[in-house]
Image (cartoon, rainbow, N blue to C red; front, side):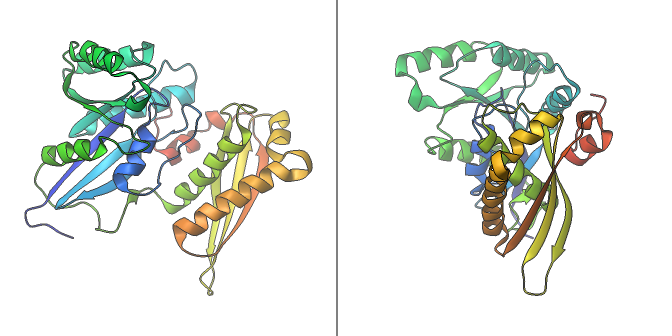
Length: 300
C-alpha cells in the first residue's frame, strides 16, 4: 500500500433521487459498482467506490437519494444519506439541471445550511439545458451561500467530470491509502452480486412493480474448475407481485437471471451458475436483519 506523499479522503455524493449519483460514482471509479436505472430510489445503502488520481485515493460514498420519507425503509435510506454527508471530507451535492430546484433540492440546501457546512455543487445533465437557464440556476443556488464551488457536468458522457475530480483530489488530506491499489469497491461480494440481480429486476419490470422487492445472496460455492454457483432469493411483498416477477411461462425471471449472470461473469472474470428463487414475504421491509445487511439503521 502506497504511503509516502500520498493523499486519501472521503467524498460523499448526495442529492435528490435520480440526480445521477450512481452514474457519477461509476465514472469516477472507472467501473460499474452501483445500480443505475431510470427508477428513483434504487440505491438503498451507502456504496463505497474507490478511485485513484495519481498519488491520491478517494473513497466515494454513493448515498441514497434525499427526499421526504414516508415508510421505515425510506426513513432509513434518507438517514444513511445524511450520515454519509456528515462523515465525509467533502460533500458533493448533485442537482439535475433539467429538473431544477424542487422540494428535494430545497430540503438538501436547508439541511446543509443547518449543519453549517458548505458543499460542492455539481449541476448534472447540463447538456439538456440552455446556457441562459443553466447560468440562472447556478446563480440561484450560489446565492444560498451553501456551496463553495460549482461544477457543470454530464455524468453520463463525462463532460466536466475530470475537472471535478481534479478539484476533489486537491481537497483530500495527506495520509496513507486505506485500500489496496486494485480494489474499486468496499462492499461484500455477496451483496454486490445481489445488487446486480436487483438492478436487472428493476430494469425488466419497469413500472409494473413497486419497490417492494429485495434480493439476497443465500449461498456461494466456488468449484475447482474456477466457476462459481450463486444462489439468490428475490423477495416480493404480495402473491400478485410474484406472478409479475415470474412472467408468463417464467420468461421474465429467466431474462433477469440471464442478464444478471452475464454481468456477474464479466465482473468476476469466471463462469457463473446463477439460481434465483422467488418468494413472497409480506413484512420483509420490517425485518431488522435486512437493515443490518445494508448498513442501515432500523430505527432511523
